[in-house]
Amino acid sequence: MSDRFCLQLVSCDKCGTENVYSTEETVCGTWIDGKPIYRKVISGKLANQSGNGLKFANVSGLKIDRMVNLYGNMSDNNNDIQITLQTSYNKTDGLSSAVNMAYSNVTGDIGYHLLGTQASYAGATAYVVIEYTKQ
Image 1 (cartoon, rainbow, N blue to C red):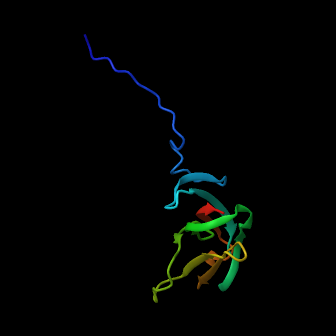
Image 2: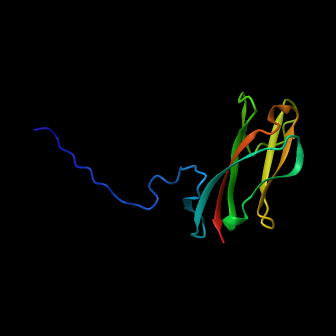
Image 3: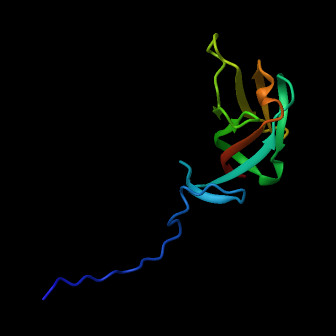
């Protein structure tokens, strides 16, 4: 007689949600104070020129208490090169584009600084992942 196996299904709150990336707000974990951590992907266009203090999106409607993580990616307009966000400016040679992003508790804006020495990233689409707790 061959071995026989049983499969038991278990219901749980967070099965499969920890690695979900969606434009919908999704619970993806728990912060150190016990509050749920939410994740949301926001897409948008970058500016046509380099600049400081540029606005990417206003997320004040999310009622963010603590920004846990802010990251993402963008590709040039030909989709030849992709870079990840937060890209540091500390490389002095060979850096054709970089973006640093920050969240303002005061305005609810995600802002950024864009370094672009080539037009290939002008108006490029970026996907920003925010992970946060709520007020």
